[in-house]
Image (tube, rainbow, N blue to C red):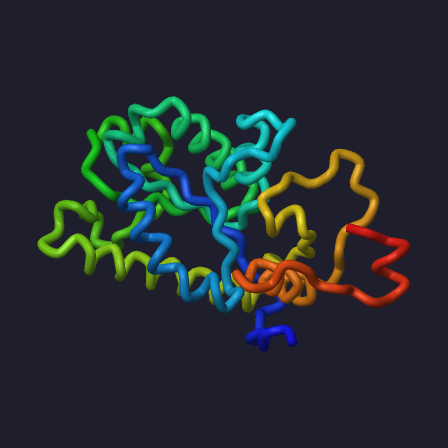
Length: 219
């Protein structure tokens, strides 16, 4: 018997997190704070997963950023010194100009003021809200938890706005870029979410879908 599937929102918000490899520990902590919302299906968190075979890594990351509705930048001196992070930031800034994504810099560690101004990050409202970096506070882990709460608040606000709804396919859920010549998109995101989460259960290896649609219109 299949395990019970919890209620999943019909419009999960996709989040991409950009971070320097040296700050991977802090990225992991932030992911843990978002884990409950991810399990509920409120958010789909994507970042630097391994690209599927046959797909260029740079193109894969670009697809991930383009699919995101919220982009988080874990800003630090390590972030500013990384060519990969700078490329991700530039793409995110371009998307933010047309209002198609919520771009949120997270001040992990202090950076030079001139770096903040010259990268256009100064035009964005960062977290934490008091302007201090997370590492400069007396209890950084508590500050990071507060940052996560602010992110979740943004997610819930976006979910109440139909502007941010978008159909999902198994490709976006599993981190695989969409087909180049895609002719059909799944219009039942809640059902796709349920199927995906069922198949990722540790004791589930297969799921039978019965119906003509599944036979003649495979994803």
